[in-house]
Image 1 (cartoon, each protein chain N blue to C red):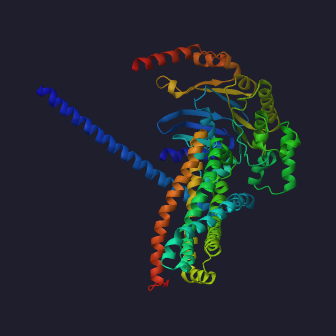
Image 2 (image 1 turned 120 degrees about the vertical axis):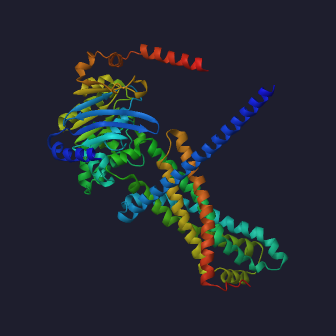
Image 3 (image 1 turned 90 degrees about the vertical axis):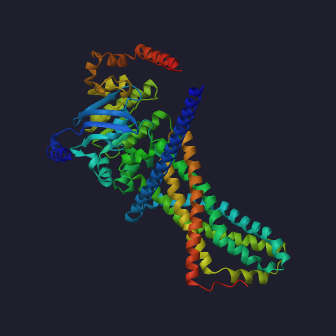
Amino acid sequence: MADRSSSGTNGQRGGLFHALTEWVSDVGAVTLAWIMEVGDVALFSLRTMRWLFTRLPPRETILPNFYQIGVLSLPVIALTGTFIGMVLAVQSYSQFRMMHLETRLGGVINLSLVRELGPVLAATMLAGRVGSAIAAELGTMRVTEQIDALSSMGANPIHYLVVPRFLGCLVLIPTLTIMADFMGVFGGWFYSTVLWKIDQHHYLENSQRMVCTFDLFAGVLKSLFFGAAIALISCHRGFHCDPGAEGVGRAATSAFVVSFVLILILDLELGIILDQIYSIIWPQGLSFI
Amino acid sequence: MAKDVRLADTTTADEKSSGPLVALRAMSVQFGNQRVLANINLEVPRGQTLAVIGESGCGKTVLLKTIIGLVRPTEGNVLFDGRDLCRLSERELSEERKRFGFVFQQAALFDSMTIAENIAFPLRQHGKQDRHEIEHLVRERLAEVGLPEAAAFKKPAELSGGMRKRVGLARALAMNPEIVLYDEPTTGLDPIMSDVINELILRTRKRYPVTSIIVTHDMNTARKVADRVVMLYPLSRLKGDSPQMIFDGSPAELDRARDARVAQFVRGEARERLMEMREQAQLAAARD
């Protein structure tokens, strides 16, 4: 009986030890895979930069991508921007009214829009619309051997496929963000002054006073990084797509998810860095009242 | 390392002039833990039409992609006109690839482009800018593969499988390559269209002094177009250290081959394979 119980304890110990080593090995494997993936994306980005600075692709490959990324995203970005502005007005109005500060609403809406919500929500929208489309298109090209066909004809797939999309995202995502900001400012103004009859003069004066050029710059700078991240992640996912329809679907989904996570991380990091820069340039800060 | 340097030195000097156009030296390819090709030695002289046969999954397509540098060998060397492709930079490799034509299994046409743009792609890529010259060459290539001019303005999705393969051939021949690699050119086509493709391969060979490597499991294609046939066997089914290339000879010798594996493949006999599958199923059941 005693023997059995001791062997049971040993077995339990062995089982526990085995489970622990398996867990450590699993964590190690996941960490290793993650590090390799990050390294692979970094190399992919470096190769893209090398082509970007040595030889630009022909205009006929750049323009269709600009059209796809920029022109076709206009309606959805305009709609997103307008609604963010209006929702901000709806959410903030009652609290500002309690303090009889409705006229300050313009400043708060516009500041939140240009510094934070405009860039982040526009980039999220574009990661879904543009990033997934890029990953699905390049993934299909990988699966149907079109990328191999490009290489076999002496064309470099990064130069021919990635650089135009990267340029498109780098130039047009900040441009679309400015558009989203503008539409948001319009949406907020419309809801506050037209529907809630807030005094237009004070609303606009406060907006002008509370939002400075640095805020606009901070928002656009963030969107530049978001654009680069969306393009590189989506192209990388498409290039390393698994075979079959399932592989393409997975590439499109992961392009969005990874881009979104990167947008959030970049937003935080850039927010901290820009705040530091702001406090160095203007140590007294700006007075909102 | 010293051995590699010696190999590179001797090949650039001697083989470039009169040696084989393609030479694989002790070449192996492995993806992760899966070995696909092991210790392949093969030389393809200029002007030869070589058919590589073997059952699905034996590494035929990987062999073809290794020859053009799309897949890097894990061991050994791939020499093209005396130059080791594994030692070339990305740019040098792109330059060498301009001497190749590749006909993909599913044609791999760019679906965002029209047929004319597909055929013109390598021409533009190689620096031809004159629109009239490009249009003339596209028309010529379309006529060579028997496609009407009206097809030039269609998108690949609007064409049948046979037409797409012919466009793929026209695109591969656009720059008068020195070597054309065909990846299963007749797979998925009806017998008539398969014969059309075979005739086009033969006609291409007559018209241009081109070296061809054709990967196929269609014995009609191998017999009709090839000067030489090699057969690969899947590594997973190979016993011991026996070579993966189990046949190397003329199409006529193929029918007289004594190796049972070759004879069964040529005649399309599945008896032994079915027995093997049954044994595997029994083993799996016993394990469970």
